[in-house]
Image (tube, rainbow, N blue to C red; front, side):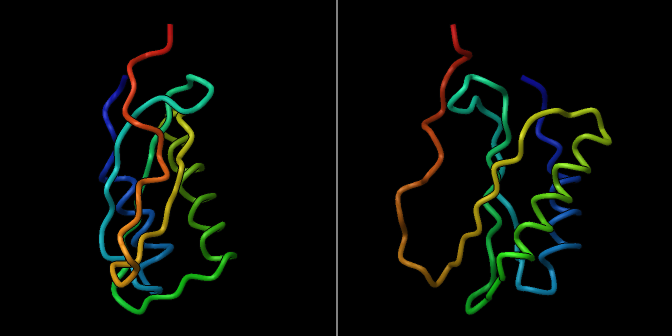
Length: 100
């Protein structure tokens, strides 16, 4: 599996979500439910931040486009995280090995 382009992901999220409280991201590369390589991205927001659906969609689209421009075909699964929310179990699949 190729490296995670964290610099690119952070730049895109700062541009698209920065005005709405983006703080930082946690990113990992893994395989999705279909066995395809994917990027699982948690965008951590500052307390009391609010991101509307259309802003989330724009951020996801910008991430996908930026990755494709770098010839990175992994799908970016984006989750917004609010630090003032109760901790929850991760929605991402457990870290797996390559499908057989």
